[in-house]
Length: 87
Length: 235
Image (tube, rainbow over all chains, first blue to last red; front, side):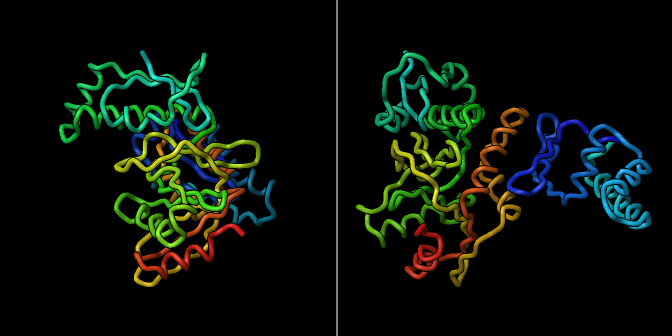
C-alpha cells in the first residue's frame, strides 16, 4: 500500500506534520501530527510498502522487539486506513 | 493604470477604483520600476464575484479579492497571512489571533486603552503579514485590514503570538509548537500549490522556533489586559 497523492510531510519547529496539498486539500483541511516513528513509517509508505517491510525497517531503525514493531505498524496502518490516507 | 504600492517591503501593483481601496491604499503609495506582485482583477471577474456573493457590494468585492490575491502571492516571497489583530508597542509586534467574533480586536483595544494611544500603534487590525528576514520574523502592515481601517505601513519584530479565547477567569499560558501549529494553520490561507505550502511551513517553522506562542483566556476587563501584558510582554 501507499500514501495517497496530495499530502506533504514536513517538520515544523520539531513537530512532524502532514498537510494536504493539491487534490488532497479538497477532502481534508486539518493538520495531522505524527510522532517520530509515524513519520519514519510515513516516509517509507510514500514510496509504497507492505506491512512486513514496514516491520523489518522498524526493527532495523529502532530498538524494539518484533511483537511491538508488528503492533505499532498495525496500529499505524489502521489509523491511516480509517483516515483514508492510503490506497 | 495600476497603482504602485509598497506593502510588507514588496513592490505591489494593484488595479482598483472603488472608494474603500482608494482610501485604504493611500498611505502605501510609492513609485518603482519593477513590480514583485501584480494584482489586476478585470471588471468582468469582479462582476461575477459580486454575483456569487450578493451580500457584498462591488466596492467590498474589490477590497476583499485584491487582498485575497495579495495574501496568496506573498507566499512566493516568504510571507504568510495571520488572521489577527496586530499591534506594536516598545518596538515589538504582538499578534492576537482567533476566529472572527472571539474578541481579538477587543483585546488589542485593551492594550491601547491601558497603555495609551501614544505607546501603541495598530499594525493591522485583522490581516497582517508575517515575513522572515534572516532569523527574525516581522509583522507587517497592509492596506487590507478587514472591517476596520486600522493599519499602518510599518513592520516590527514579533514579540509574541497570542491565541485568544473567551473565559470567565483570565489566564495565559505558553503553548508548545505542536499545540500552536493547528491553531495557527486555522488562521491563515491554506494554499493548494505545494511550493506555496512549503513556503507557508517555512515561515511557520521560523515563527515557532523564534517567537513564543501563548493561549489567552480573557474577558474585556482590565485584569485580562494585565494578566496578558505581564506575561507576554518582551522584557
